[in-house]
Image 1 (tube, helix red, strand yellow):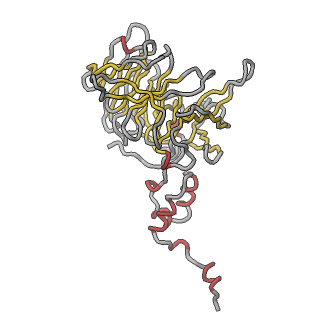
Image 2: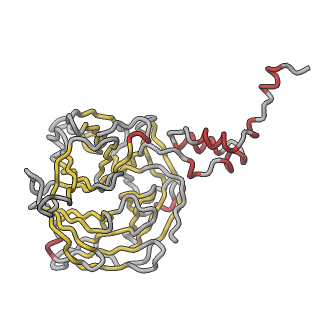
Image 3: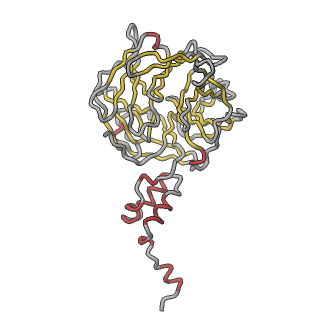
Amino acid sequence: MKTESNEAQEKDWVALPPDVLNLIAKLFNEITHFVRFRAVCPSWRSSTPVTDLAPQFPWILDNRKDPHDPNLSFYSVTFNKIYTINAPSSLNKTLSGHSDGYMFTFSQRHQAVSLLNPLNNHHIPLPAYQLVGNPQWIGPRETQMGEYVVCYGHSGHQSPKLVFCHPSQNYWRELELSSDYTDCHHFYLKGMLFSVERITGATKVTNIADGTLAYVIPPVEGHLAQVAEYLVEDSRGDILRVPRHNPRFINGLDVYRLDVATKNGLPRWVKVNNIGNQALFIDKDGGFVLRASHLSGIKENCIYFLKKIYMGVHIEPSYGVERIDIETSAREHIPCPLKEPVSWLVPSLCHLSAQ
């Protein structure tokens, strides 16, 4: 005769209702646990599509020294683990920037650009284009497969050229820029090109549809020449500006919000000490904003900044994450075991369509 304990042990977990499985799957705040959960059996996998993945704390991509190595290394800050992922579509390519879980890739040998999700190896080739030098990918970060923009630097007498396309198109559109745009940091936000002059700190906003100058934003107070700038669109649609000071002496990172509704009608940067329930993630390619309430382990009103840590004149720099409170400038160093972390990536298993 079966007892109640025996009946519990013989319970068919495979037969859990799909709605229950769906709720369980959305609790995983680490993508590897979500993958293992779906791998239990066909029933669990069919009941939990990859779109059910809970919001993820960004991983950190390590710089790959050997482009012939198909393996990519990522570090999970929340779980203090390094994951090595085989991504054969990344062979002989440099990776930079990310959007919607995809990274922009460039092959010097074949002069080819593409989009790649390194976690599921989904590869989206972009149209062929005759490149000059290495392309600089300038955004956007969150697009759902909108237009992807690439800015190509030109040397000598040549002016910079902006080229962009939608992945479903088989051609690039070009926009010639004047020489005034050569020494600038470029960002593509809200369908406009924002070009921050390195010397003056002024920001030129250009309509990419016809190349006309829409307006110029004066520099922030105390701008330092040749200081790297990051422009990011936050979750509320505001554009934020973060000047990157000398990493050897950094005490904090000032944050500015673009105010276009001024009394005199002239846009300006306004310093802020609170961005609400949001966190900024900054790397060498730029930055993006995530809602802190959607992610376990993220502190709101903070900047997570990938940087070199200088310990002394004759000591090799280490790498890590500086978490900086925007309001108080309080800093916390988060160690990173990677040899040379280069970029944040929000893990995703989704296959984006180029259509």
